[in-house]
Amino acid sequence: MIAPAKKKSDKPRCGLCGKNKKLTKTECCGNWICDDHDKYVLFSYARNSCHRNHDRYTLCSYHHNEGHAGHWKDCKKCRDSFETEIYVWYGTNEYNFEKLENPPKFEPKHCSVCRRILTAREGLQVRHLHGKGNGEENASNQALNLTVLPRTAKPKVSAVVRAHNFAMPKEPVFAAAGSQRWLQVAVAKAPTVLERTIREAGAIDQDETLSWSSPLASTQFAEYRDEEAFRALGIAEFPVRALADFWPRRGPVWDGLAVTDREKFLLVEAKAHVAEVLSPPSKAGPKSKAVIAAALEEARMFYAPRASKVWSEHFYQYVNRLAHQYFVAHVNCLPSRLVFLDFYNAREMNGPTSAAEWLGVTKLIHAFLGLPESLERFGVFHAYINVAELESAL
Image (cartoon, rainbow, N blue to C red; front, side, top):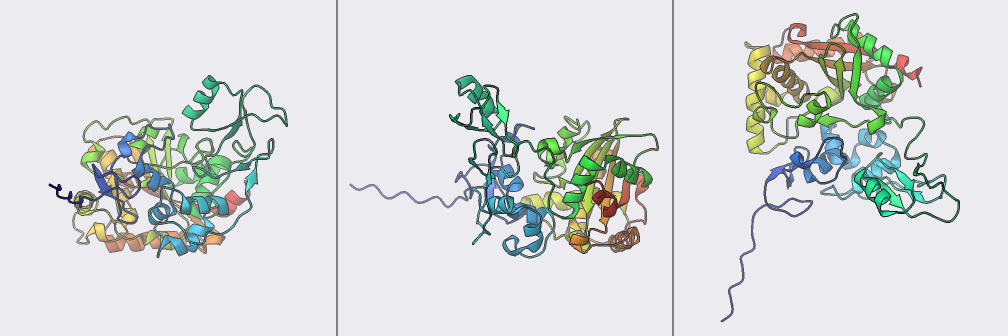
């Protein structure tokens, strides 16, 4: 007797690895993916999480997180934000559900020592090494997530492991444009200008100093989200309420994170043009959306109890940052400050040309959402920085 054919499972599967257990949907494109962000160990740079891989290493996620309009495949802002090789890698690597069609051509980089072609594997985090070739050293390099190449006869290389110039540049490689670029430049090249700007906004005291956790050239300007972001600040766990009980995974990606010498935490959201402010609502699945809506309503009742607007539908990036500041500072009673850092005179973005223009945008947002004109009593500050001051530091 012929056994009946097994019915093909109609369970959703991760679009990257094919697994069908413990799944969620991406906010950027609504595809099923493994809900495995918790597998990642901070600063390990492992690639063991489908969720984190798509979130951190694709144009799809970057496009969504930056609040760009339209589709990522034909987004000029995305194209202008990266060097061509990195742009192509983000759009065509194995962490994408759909890949960039007809990617632009580029001239590959070569190692200055052995002349091998260097790939953009893992974005900007590329380290090309020559070593002794013994098992212990190779195992160590692999543990650091480095690309180990066999030793070549010519040119002769020292027995000591040598990192090539492309991997460890003398000068950091900044993003190509926008707030991401200028915050990286500010932290790496003009920290006193940045600190002065934040101090003048009232977010830190006159004699208070900052130590930045992100973005740092030493981590290829990595940006963090969820528990990973707060661990980078030194917050191992929250004392009153866990983040997972307030907000679903894949929450805001923080543009900047810092700690003051008085152990206050600084959360930074940066912008360089007005269109970034007009971010669309979350594309999370129904379950996550319900959690987000509840958190935003809780935050609205704290900041603007008389307001009637539904926060989950308007200025999503702005309100979700406010919600996280509420969670850290007022739910968990930690000394946190939220800084909206607005760059002006970013000519490549055709953004505002003065702090006054940004102030007008902020007033409009607050009026629409029913927020008070100033949120400083809640630990929320707006700082304005002239890109011209940063250009002179390059």
